[in-house]
Image (cartoon, rainbow, N blue to C red):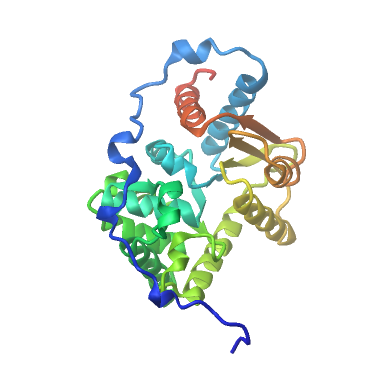
Length: 317
């Protein structure tokens, strides 16, 4: 027993999702282009970020064609920015072979799958003591972690199964990637997710499921290294400034320790430059083979997707 007092989470007052204002609904999600906009892509200059985009797109398509892993690391903002459907479309084309996310990504995706809306107004809800108090969200997410621990599943697998049961499952990244058999790994820092504020959160179950996902991710990372001087797979970090760069660095360390050699491509996409992303994604894992592209996700990911379509059709991005 700890000698320090703990707060009693069983005394919190939950709030029904139906009564909670949400900033993102199904109507806000992006639509998919039928084909790449060649006129726009061909007119991008061969300079700065446009040049970096072409490089990363070319490497992504090349890696996928060569059977190398293309691992996406994604923070929650990709869901909140409405570009989840593009992740699904890339996965369906073989351009995402593993998706690593943080706990918040999974929460927003689960809410979209079951309620058709997500992203509460934190500034408005926090003074009222209502921020993160959705009991339905907590029951779904915490229940998935408990199921994962009980059945020996990864957190991403169990959350994908939960999302697949939602009324709006077609809007869910987790559900669709689960259907495709693509590993989704969920990496949790205890105390950072709204579901940790609820009494049904089992820390042991969360830890077991998320640690299993780390081992799944490390297995994928161990396949990144190319042969000789050739580049192998790709790791693309979208929007996670701290957690996923740290997780990826440890996964690469495990992979190197177990014998992975060779180079691979890394890239970071975010609306500003971050220290850990620069070091742990762009610089350290495969020196000289990393790129950093700065811009909003709701603009960069559609451009990336369209350029990948163009490259896949045999045209330069």
